[in-house]
Image (cartoon, rainbow, N blue to C red; front, side, top):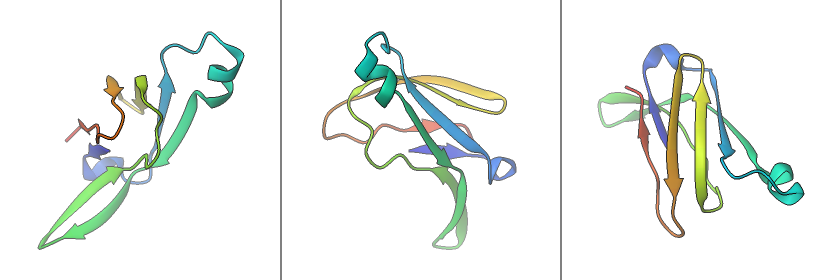
Length: 82
């Protein structure tokens, strides 16, 4: 889950496995999600959701933002770019 500023709505976020040395990893390495806005109670939240990232160490990139994050099995990983 990547939380973002409203200005980022519509941008694409890329998540790439850091260890993409094998052919299989290179095939599975790239994931994309768009930042969308949703109303939560009386506020709007802007976020990109990657529902099924395999566990691993990722570089997450969007225009003007970059982060690294570890995804653990059975857990939700979050990045806050707000």
